Amino acid sequence: MITDKEIRKRYLGIPYEHLGRDLSGIDCWFLIMDAYKYAKGVDIVDVNCYGNMGKMPEGFSIENYYKNWRQHGAPVFLDLLIFKNSTGGLHAGLYLSRGEFIHACRAGVVVSRIDDKRWGSILIGIFRYEGIK
Image (cartoon, rainbow, N blue to C red):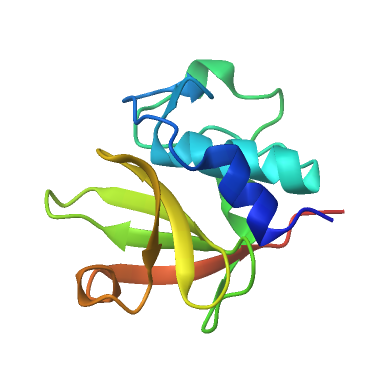
């Protein structure tokens, strides 16, 4: 089982890149996709706001995809955190432990505290992926 420490080691310090889709530079959604593949062996489909619909798997249904995620009140390791950013867009991170989450922002991949008023005030929800068979 992958640990909090291993997630930090793998991602911290990677630079931010808009639409970055490899570990040389990533955005917040690729962090989610890669971490789920790395830690759980799960392929999270790239359905972020950038519209990568040309690469969807055959038979893919957006409705079924969203049914794989359930909102929760208290986060556990690798739960998805969704935030509403200052431009009205969305930002995502992954919960680690002890009130900390990892995310890719302009400063690169960093760890922040969920109880920091900057982040706590814009948190939309905590979601757990339940589509794992």
